[in-house]
Length: 413
Image (cartoon, rainbow, N blue to C red; front, side, top):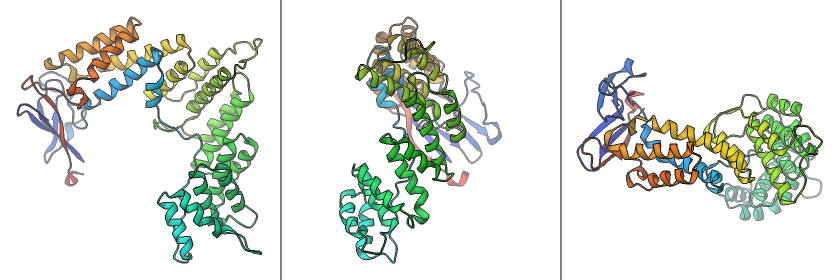
């Protein structure tokens, strides 16, 4: 288990936070006092001096800079610049595929071992050159599906999807593939889906087994097909089928869910229409304006995390839908700043300037003034203590206190 050591950079104030030999070392982030707790009294323990909850693990104030960064990006999107928010959003894989190259075997010829070693080292072009002659099957013999898989990975990693797909197809020829069949079908299906061959991808994904990757890819394909087929709102039945196929959604912020993928695909469709000056839904389709379709898609999200709400805001801002972006940003920024105003570390007297700036930013958001709020937030982010993940020290009022060491006490696990 981890222990954190806190120290001021000016005075001698210091404390440990985490498990101890007799229980837990706790710390109050408001009055910055250290407390010892018995092991059974950790949950919801409060400071006897100020009444705030004691910290017994990671410190909340260390999240302050990151939270300000999130607010600043959302405020920038509200102000018409969605780029900072887009840079924060994770790159989520639309389809899942295992591109781990095969391990060299003891019975591999030296040239095959050299090629596979180059591939595993990330030398994709070199691996391709070395593998190409090894899969040129002599008359009457099939090329090794294992080496074809390796060459396909090398080609795909080198930015040659058509060549990679051809390698996977050769490996899947009758009599080949063997134990690699499901992985090969996932890989080829992903490439087919990306170039718009939904029918081919559907066949491969259907034969790819019941792994999490195969089920998600079948679900993702249903979502993307539903968006591509309908000029307006995608078929609700297809979306329901995708949810059933995908199974329990992942709360992990970097994972796609059906709701996140649906939103992303609809925003991409709207951007493509704008780029090519294409019409949207037919005017005689009741309730099918673009804004209403996206409003419906908002209700399809499985989670209400910052990352989900930021994805929505980024979509509206990117599409230039100012009214929708403003409503989304005001709600998101208000919630983020409201949570910060309740943080114990901002209640200490030396942190009063920080707390005042957060309150001013929150008021600017409430007044519909994103640029004013953004100035306040950026000024906070430029503070040296905040940028170093530290807060003003109560002990001396001159320095800043923060984590200067993290230890793992294996004896307390």
